[in-house]
Structures are given as structure tokens and as C-alpha cells.
Image (cartoon, rainbow, N blue to C red; front, side, top):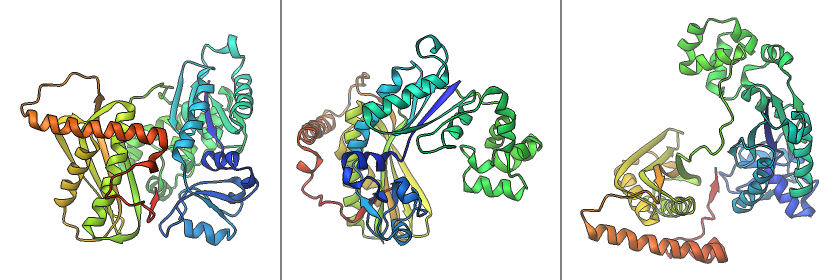
Length: 391
């Protein structure tokens, strides 16, 4: 049996934990600019129809007394580490899939922790006692069903789908509840007259593959109770990126470059913290019509210098003709390797020396920021990004 543990309204709950005066209030975490979106909503806010990913202006329309709190991602990461430490005491097979959710394989843990139900109850108790937060847990023999089960009785829920109930639950499951079925796939399935996995079960595999491509195979397998996905601990990081939605659309290259500089510093900081080098740098842009484009370049040598990331992203921006105004901009680093990996000797020592100098500066800045906070030191050309909201 597999457990899926999902912290309840995690960001909002952490804010209410740290600020008791906010308990019981309709609260959201997110940016309060014109383009801000809700990153998390307390259950009090959800009673007004407010939910994550909702534009902030709509959330305020639905709940005029809404309390808006800016995200504190370092604090959420700190609490997340405590949550994952609790889970790791129950099984060696824990797969963290986001900052506030994880899968746990209960196989072989019965002698220590009892049945999966007993284990889930003990985990919920530890969460309350040690981090003062609640979680919802789903238990099922299939990974995708465990995730669905954890959402059935939120908040503070515990739902078990036993092996004998799997076929019936799958047959009645609405297709939009299946992980991986987005708006486009849902619309296509609806056009085919398929509302549940039971309907999918009655449909030929070739028909679904023709409409949905490779995902059609997975959907048919799930409909027949086949899920090969296992709990896989410590999935290697494949990329590091950050993106932001601008408070207003712009074609001002200087403004866009300023955002790139801030984002490059954040990506570089994450590379150094996680001890990675990156070979590929990617620029992501979304224009006023929501059309998204990406441009990437693979470097001759893997790097973790914020300055090199910025210069590369800046060159990618300069190579693109800004026909329309930009509403979102982002920077990513991929093709990651450990920073302990031996490197080929550089043919141009002056370039290596320059990059090394920037990386020394970056590490010095990292140490200052770690001790005194990220607001204590920043590039002189960066002003506080008060006109940005986090996606």
C-alpha cells in the first residue's frame, strides 16, 4: 500500500501558525499587485470560492475582507524539511514531489509501525505535535489512487481505498480528477463522451491514443487498474528555474534585463546551494497574447556563476525580436552535473579566471545573505522588485 501525504493549505497554514492573530481569518498567500495570483488559500478563504492560481483581483472581489500575505519561501522550505524528516522515520521509501506533499511506500514497515492505517494515524499525530500543522493522507495500492484519496476528505482527512474497492472507485472516477488530465485533455475526453475512467475502460486503446497521443496509453492503463509508477526516493534534480509575471506588459528591454538579473542571481544561488553546475541556460517569455517561447543555449563549460547566467540570458533576449509586449519572463538552468565532477582543462585560461572570480564573489554574497538575509546585500543595479508577483 502507498500513502500520499498532502499538507493542508500549507503556505497559508504556516502563516497562521507563525501569526496566531491570523487564525480563523480568510487568508491568502501571494502577490498583491495587479497581476498577482493566489499561491495558497486558507480554508476560511476557500468558503468564498477563493482558490490557488486565482488572480488576486478576483479573490478580493469574492472576499472583500481577504488578508493577503507575501510569500516567505525560505520559511516554507524550513517547515517542509521538518515534515519530510517525520516521514523518513516511517519508511526508507519516501518520494517528495513538492514542497508540501510526498508519497510513502508502506511495504515492509508493518512490524515497526503496524498497518498502513495505523501508520497514517501516527504520522498525523506527529505532524500536529511536532510542526503544529495538519495533513490529509490517502492510502491505496496504486500510486495515482493514493493521491486522489488524499483529496477526498480535506482538511485533516484520512481515506483508504482497499484492493477490493479499486475497480469500483476507478470506474466511477471523473476523468478530470486523474493526475495529468489538464483542461485540454479534459475537453477532448468530454467531446468523446468520456466522463469517467469507467467510460475510458470501454473505449478502444487506439481511439484514445489517436486523440491524446502517448498519454492515451497511460489513461487506458489507469482505467484498467494498472499503474507501474513506484515510490522513488531522491529523484535527481533535472533543472532549476524561476519566472515572474510582470505587473504590466512591457517591451522595455532595460526593464526586462533588470528582471533577468534578479532571476539569474536566484538561479545561480540555487545551483551553488545544491552544488550543481549547469551546461544549458534557457530564457522563457510569454507575450501579451499568452504565447510562450523559449530559447536555450548550451555552454562550452558547465557553470554556476550568476553573472554568466545573466550574460547568457541577456544575449538570448537580445537575439529575439520583441514584436509584442512581454507579460512573463523566466530563466532556467539545466543539463546539471555535480560541482565535484572533474572538468576538462579550459583552452582559454583568461575566461576561466574571469568566471572563477565571479563565482568567488557569488559565494561571498551567498554567505552574507545566509547570515543576514537576502535583503542585506544585492547588486547595485537592482532595486527591490515591488512591481513583480510570484507565479
